[in-house]
Length: 218
Image (cartoon, rainbow, N blue to C red; front, side):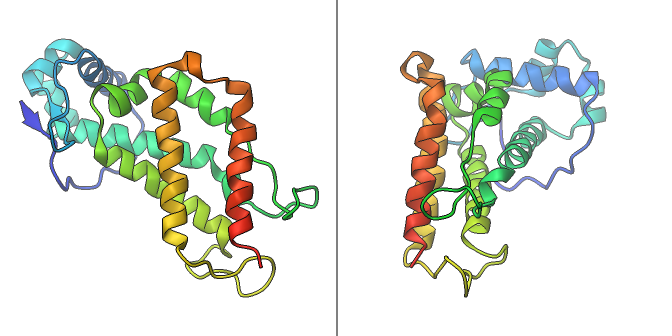
């Protein structure tokens, strides 16, 4: 078995071809089948190149023409999912709206995000439920925090010095709570979809962001 590298080199986004898609699909399937559960430290135990190639029906030489090791496949998958989620959740960064709530905040919707997770359910199930991937979870949380910071600031690192926002004590703690809650809620949904009424999700999310906005107004 090959274990994912602690600090793998960055993988630049690139178009996926049929071979790369087959390899990624095979890795997701292997993780969901429980053949390679996560270890006690939360690091995902990855299959060998031989096992992955057999599952993907590709030759080892073909695998190495696309990837250096199995950890790189996981790295690419993680980055792609987080990048797509960040693009879908761009509206979360926009707070001001003429027809907003009591704090002038625009309503947000996570329906496109839920649709994306549903379309990629096997991948999210593999990384959140079957073989919890701490690195992926932290990457996703970091993306959520970045977007919440943009909502709380002018787009820089410092809180707004004018307008409705003000510096907030425990800002990082607030961001951790929001990010952790969103990832945990997704995991809960994947564990048992019957316990989640999807039409009510936006109401919950807007309540959470209203509370967030309430913490950062004078």
